[in-house]
Image 1: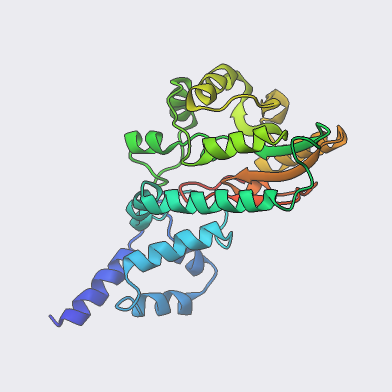
Image 2 (image 1 turned 120 degrees about the horizontal axis):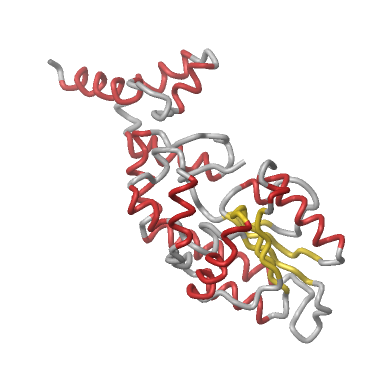
Length: 271
């Protein structure tokens, strides 16, 4: 069999061979919309668009919020996502985001000697301050399966999540400027003790408030829940200079902060 025909068939089999709901694939999404021409175009150009480039393109479009509401990472891209999230490139990308936060400080009027105590900064926790990478390593998921909330909460209770690279330094630089730090997380209220212990062990302390989901918040989408908490902070008179998180839902809704800073994370999508 001609080599080019063999490669084309192999790629077509790789992209189209979806057998279950967990094998989510962007091509299926296009097909469900009737975009057969788009599917055909991608498969037929398989020789020039190899799997690595396809998966990197998928990951990039997640980060810029073109791809939304995915349940799991496409099965053919799980190893690619794992390689990225455990790579030095991921750490470099986080560091670049941290650098931009530092530059943002240069435009702020608030300094430690001038702050009136009403300047605020918001951090998410999971994959913003504390990394869930060890959980995914031990379970082998990296987005290839839906998150098992029971297993994940059992892991949280172990209090062993490390800090996200470069974030401890940034956290304390913000705090030392006299800016109040608020942690707004989707973690449940009953995980408060484990969360506090883990944060302190990872090097974070001195926050002004740690806000977790109470019973009244559990049925709300994350974007609604976090928007309501920002509204509450501003109602108290706080000026929110920035929000840093790994999910777009942490920034959605009003009131808008002066700046938002997104950390890379294509393992899961939280609405």
